[in-house]
Length: 137
Image: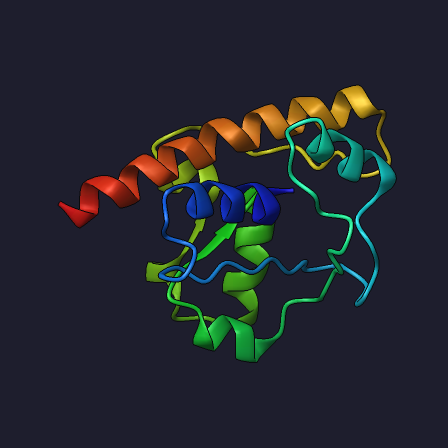
């Protein structure tokens, strides 16, 4: 959901060709579609993620990324453990934008749980977008 929403935000700002966004999971199975509730929650925000396919994070992705933003501190720690020495480019999304806590994984939850998670993601991504705009100045 975060990838789809952030890409949509970047497109509305005309920045979608300047910033590459990709999501990958630590425990994800490759080539799985987004959950039905994720698709519905995003459709309610007028963002279509029905073509999204999951992928598991790889060492190549980690090495090629300028910045890695995770949803939880646990995910951040798993990446840091797998690839020591990259502390300067791995953050939780909330940490990167000056917020506390994790973004809960709604996987398997009701549509309401997905929508709550999406609200949390949207707040953090709005701050991230603002941060990018300010850094451009």
